[in-house]
Image 1 (cartoon, rainbow, N blue to C red):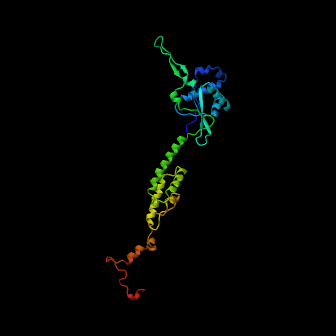
Image 2 (cartoon, rainbow, N blue to C red):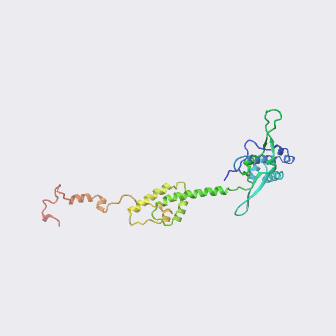
Image 3 (cartoon, rainbow, N blue to C red):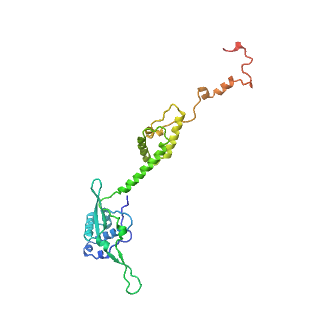
Length: 276
């Protein structure tokens, strides 16, 4: 959405013929308002100024601003067009453009010293090329729906691309639509929710699945619904029995192994002395 036009900062462009108009001179603030409008129309881009903002700058009421606009319109200095909501047809604002009198007006320019008889240069009050698409908003703030829709479309398209990066690596591809909805909600919840984090969690989950053959990967719609944060044990497998786990197994193997290089621990022991 374009920023609201905050008014001229240095000069107000008021045409001479308008500044000498008897009706406008009776309401001098209408001339100041005209200066704001001309300045806006000669500025590249779209700018907005509500009646409330204008009233504050001119130290008057919004109703007085509306009266000034009506007077300027009667003088054919401006043309106002209502803007309707496409869905409800409600009036959401008005577009102000230069009127015929303003477009056709000419200001006396600087003369050039090229000799006698040289014609004085004239310059248009309003640059038609620039003012064509410019507008001034009254009464209500108007949302630039086309720009917003374009931005949203770009955002969704980028999310779809990043989602596919993770989804393509996930083993159980059931519930893709629900998975994407969960993914969008999760990504938008925090700037810390990144694809890098999700890919790291997926890597750990795949390792867990490989180390546990009995385990079947959950549906994609389930995993993307926050289950990627499950705590998983993916360390090296534990020893097969308690003897290995407690460190006794190696001693036991040394005891029973006779590779011909060491002394047999049972040599010299009679059968009568054996406990079995």
